Length: 364
Image (cartoon, rainbow, N blue to C red; front, side, top):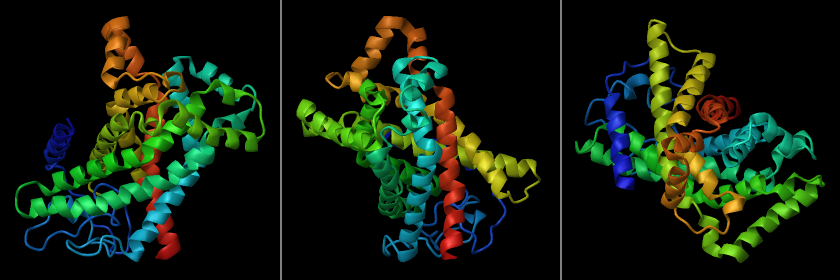
């Protein structure tokens, strides 16, 4: 199944090969947009063959990884640190709260107003940060590192196939992003499970000091180990990793398309940071809609109420279909699409725009 996913992602990437190229960026300008792939995690174009229009959108970055060279340079590690810091701040200020509302909506089916009341009834707005300490912090810091290392390993291998003419270069890069997303999924799945258990456990909605919330959050890990064993921490990991392949591939593809369409509408002019943020927001929203059913399924699997349920994801979908038919499936798996689109869109903006801005301020 995962091979077919990669093939589908590659086909979709290749289908965009007709997109027009964006104007060249200044040599020192650092960008994480799909038109200029993350310089920290990409391989330099091979001199033996001409670059595609997409690859010529920006000059080679001094942070790029030559084929056969060291996987991680000092500057790449600096960019990974910036990515982790941006993700941490974003999740603290807004991302975690949006995800909390989204997961609660997915698992309860209640209106947004009822979801917000249930979360903040006893603790007020700080209740939106339940699960952030410690699991949300660890998850935020791990996102950039896991993705970056996996991409640095996969990219030279897949681009080597492109050098041999076995794979379009654009498809190779999208596949590398999808595979890196899958690795990230396995690394982050235990942390997401523990965070989701805190979010969906009614006991955490009671008023309590922050230190008590943190202590009980740590205790959730021991409870999972006692109830489900060590493998219980990996519940839903296959679904999560499978979803991450689609997440990262579609985010890059849709954001790229939005940027190039916007640039074409402006007569080929270079996009401003605000326009790039808008394109990332819209592209991330389209990606969210495309991957929402898998996101909902994962939340249902990792819900605290399903901690003793050993059924597979297929069994869960079949039960939902038998209970409500196709209409029931739509109602179950497209729920909370608004919160999902906003969260994914802003996450894409953070990684594509805010991270390089921070890097340039600190290290350029």
